[in-house]
Image (tube, rainbow, N blue to C red; front, side, top):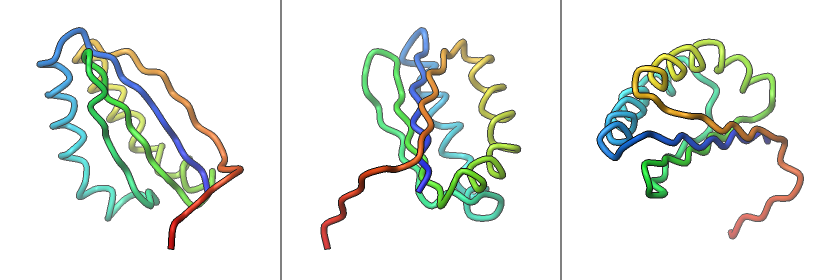
Length: 97
């Protein structure tokens, strides 16, 4: 399992809401063009969004990132967002059955 966690900080709540709307608009592409297993966006306050994307492996992350990264980077620049990217392989996992 490969997980990408990223936090985006925007200068104000309005720009954060615009970013959330943009991310929501990408959901149809997740089914058709990506290898994302699941994706969540959390409003963590103070103009910040926390995003969590899970992939089967790093190769599938890299494949999806070819189209996702340029779209995301463009949106962030337009909305003056600052990105903190935290990717990594899962080493411990727990799931309740």
